[in-house]
Image (cartoon, rainbow, N blue to C red; front, side):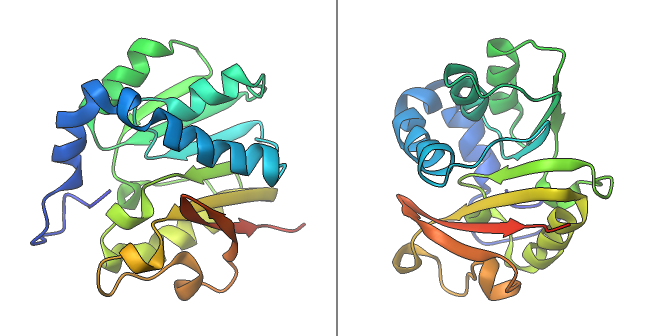
Length: 190
């Protein structure tokens, strides 16, 4: 999401998400599930014990993991700067393993090597360009030895002028396919 510290000519996406939170699931659930299916069924990735969901929104990824019996996590961190989206997620999922945090991705302070799986679905393009490189560094540092991160971006032909993909900023983030969005993955090796 766009940082509160950044002044930009574009409309703050958080304001838009606060407005659309009530109807978000009915509008975007099918699209998001298509992306989740790509990660967990086609790429055959297994979510780790400690998950970080940056831009968790209304909790659709949690819902998906529960529906597919992939909810073997010990700790699930839901990060979102939209209070209305987080309220929806909290109302749907009251599980002691899930921790909800109202925050921008840019403002996160993560413990090194503490997260097994990091997901950023439909978030990258809302982050201000000047903050992207530091976010990638935080992601890489916070992953465990066997951890991985998935970041999706809108297709190149739809990206706003000047926006760069994760692999443009860090060549360790590899393009791994397309399903509605472009998918990039960073895999830490022990």
